[in-house]
Amino acid sequence: MSSKSLCGQSNKDIALNSSLPPTRRSLPIALIRAREQAMQPIREMLAATGLTEQQWRVLRVLAEAGPIDATKLSDRAGLLLPSLTRIARSMSQKGLITRQSDPKDRRRQVLAITPVGQRIIADNHVHALRIVDGFKDRIGAEKYEQLLDLLEAFSAASDRDNTDS
Amino acid sequence: MSSKSLCGQSNKDIALNSSLPPTRRSLPIALIRAREQAMQPIREMLAATGLTEQQWRVLRVLAEAGPIDATKLSDRAGLLLPSLTRIARSMSQKGLITRQSDPKDRRRQVLAITPVGQRIIADNHVHALRIVDGFKDRIGAEKYEQLLDLLEAFSAASDRDNTDS
DNA sequence: GGGATTTACTTGACATGTTAACAAATATCC
DNA sequence: GGATATTTGTTAACATGTCAAGTAAATCCC
Image (cartoon, chains in turn red, cyan, orange, yellow):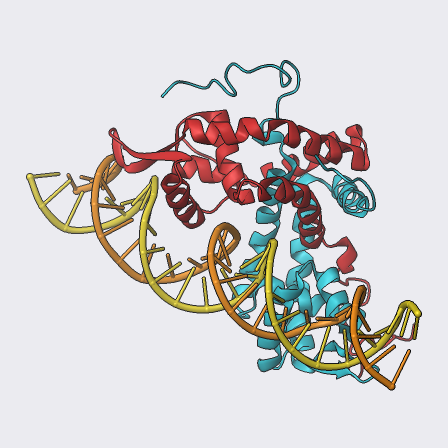
């Protein structure tokens, strides 16, 4: 099998039968593409509110979970703690959330949504529902659920060495 | 403040069965989580090289596709053009890629991988293969391919729909 | 052929992603 | 009790994400 000399000169053996998958079949790239597509209508919705996607996710989680500390919130919203620190400061200044240190453990910052924040969610509720419907329409409701299941399974499979007492 | 009271009292048209999905079943969040999990071993691999994930993707696509213009590269690597502009400048200065304007169309910037860049890919080839194997092990090879198919289908279904108010 | 439009980047401004270093409060251990 | 380690969050520094505006080259169109 003569190699095609992909990029020019050095057609050294790159271990023929064990080559990296084409970038079309790269999971990271596929995830990034899908995220880009999914975010697009959400950003359009949020443009009118002045919120970013991340700030919207913070409101969504707080509305769902009630007051929680920053670490749990960052985990549930898919944010890193340093990002959340800045986002929370900004949202607090805008009156969308409140921050108070936990009296039981003063390291913890307990965050909670305000009525103003709840109002934003309520105002965009119907629009958000239509966006989710749009997701389902893209590949069908069944495959959509299947996709969510697979993503969840992939992310959950990170507990290898969890032999706690 | 009060407890959960998701949207409160105005249940006029939002009503009963039409509530937003729990954040656990949110596609954007699920995609972000999965991406975070997938990137983790890749970042560990790249830590020794000083490259970022994005720079690695640029090298991967250029090695696969040969010299291409910035727009196509950004599309295939899952980057926005403004990001690629800066990344390409940085990588060009490091000698990982080359940039030259297309004589046929001088608006276009044709980017290509250098031997130095190819060397980085070759050096990390085996490690990268192991990472991909790790992905498959997380949920099984079959579900892994299924996940890629669904992601691809979701991203491809973007030629329609005009969700407007 | 020349103005209007489109394309292909580029740049700027700001928000977030990411890692490392750090401070403060708590937990552990002797 | 007090030194040490761990947890929780913050800050800093830099790279990227994102949108808007800008520039230069090609295309359209009469």
